[in-house]
Length: 337
Image (spheres, rainbow, N blue to C red):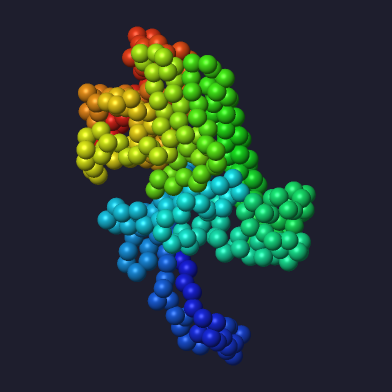
C-alpha cells in the first residue's frame, strides 16, 4: 500500500531540532487530497485507488500495466493502452488518473527521466522521438545512471527489461504472423484483400488486439473465396460495430455479448470478436439462429489472426468450425459465475 498527497511548496511545514537532537515538524502537512494505492500482494501491480472515500478498481494486462479503472458503480472512468514505446494511447478519462505504468513506476519518474535525458543530449525526448533520434547505446548509458539516481533498484530494472523484451518478442511474432497471412490472401486469385489508400487511426472505445488494430488501420475488407457458397467477408472499421444492436436490434449491457463486435458479415450470418480484457480477441460463431444462446456460442478462433488463417486454409469449403474434424475450443459462456 502506498499513500501520496500534494501541496504547494509554501504550505510545507517547517522543521526544527529540539534539545535532544530530534527533528520536529512545526505544524501538520495538509493531506486533504490523500490518495491511497493498493497493490497486489508481493508485486508492483496496483489493484485499487482510494480517494475522497471513493474506491476505484484497477485492471491490468498480463505485464502488470494498468489498462482500465472502474468506480464503485462499475463504470469505466479511465482506460488506455500502450504503444511500442511504452507511451499511453487511446486514453479515456484523465491521463494522470493512473500514474503507475511499468512495474509500478510512477509517471513523474518517467517525466524526470525524459527531462534529464533532453538536458544531457540536447534532443527532444518523448516516445518515438527518443528511440529514433538518440542512439540505443546513448540511451542505455544515460538511462542506467538516471534510474540509479531516481532510486530504482537494479533488480527492478532487470525485471523491467526482461518483461519488456518478452513483450516486444510477443508483439513481433504476432505482427509477423498477421502480415504473413495477409500477404498470402493478397496473392490468392480467389480472395480479395482491399488495402486502404492511407493509414487511419482507430478508436472504438475498447482495447484492441495488436493484430486486429493493424488490420483495421491499414485495410478496408477481406473477402475469402468470393465465388464459393461459403464465402466470408471480414469487415473494415466502417462496419466494425457492436454486435447486439446489429444482430438483435438492441443493447444488452448486462450480458457478456455487450463486448462483442462484428468482424465478419454475411447477413444474416455473423462472426463476432470479443473485446473484453479476459477474452480479448476470441472469435465466435454468431449466426442469427444461435446468437447469445448459452452453450450455443462456440469459440471458433482464439485470435483474429487465427480466424484469418483458418478461413484461408478452408479454401471456400464448408465452415471449418462446423466440420466433424474441428477441435472444440469452448463456448463464449464457459466459466462464467
